[in-house]
Image 1: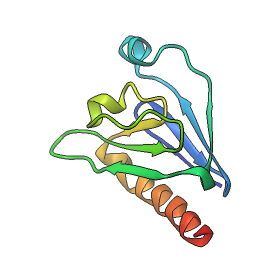
Image 2 (image 1 turned 180 degrees about the vertical axis):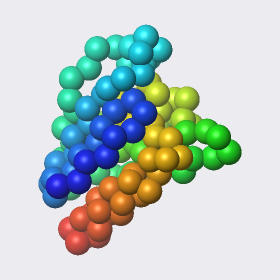
Image 3 (image 1 turned 30 degrees about the horizontal axis):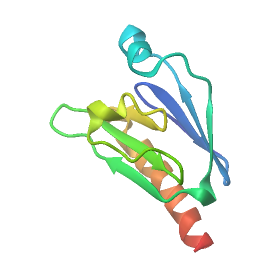
Image 4 (image 1 turned 90 degrees about the vertical axis):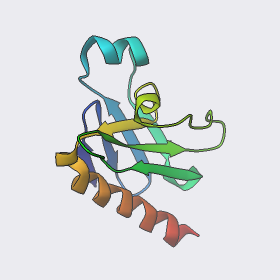
Length: 111
């Protein structure tokens, strides 16, 4: 099982289920996302993983798409309001790359 912690939440993958737990972020995150519980996504139902690396002093994010989800709208600012996305910093990039690669390898094996 892999688990990584980002700026506004944690993402874990147990080999079948992706769990997103929103944490931190303060009042700004609450205003964007509201009070949320954990999100559980069946990995085999994913249609896309959007991964944006950190840029010059900016944050990156990972977002998960699946049937029935509203389509992604854009960049990291929009990812703040997406309950299926977690923002990460440059220091957290390597951990999120490893998680992304683990999920992609799972999807590849399922294809």
